[in-house]
Image 1: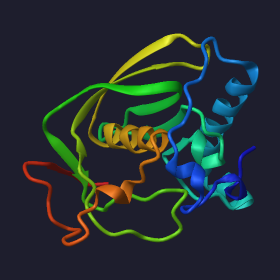
Image 2: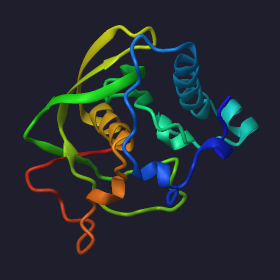
Image 3: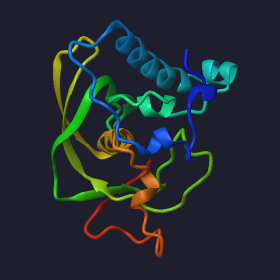
Image 4: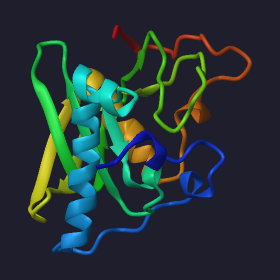
Length: 184
């Protein structure tokens, strides 16, 4: 089981490097790592388990955040309709995206960042993600709103990008032009 001790923090070099593709079909070891990422996210959202193990709540986790520089992410969240998006994916990539942008009015946070970083993070409002599931089968997801933002945040980790890289240093709360604000 992954705990907060396993999650590396900003400043660690792995967070700034591009992760390696995972060979398909995935090895048993890679499947176990991917399962453990999703397990952490689900456990972190369970009040009893998160308190018992001192887990910080999250909606996504990428393998580089546990110092495994491979292209794996796990996401477990709901959209505004209450639909659940629960995915453990190998080699996810954004195949296409909208011109329209969106941002979280509350800003973004990260399990690898122990400080609040205020500011708006411009993201694509809609994305299509292509990836492989835990068994190595191809997956195509069309996402919008909060789930789209979460996936972009996690995929950025695979490319060595942190969410605050997008915040305008001179004017952190400058609304991205023509972007849709998303309450969370």
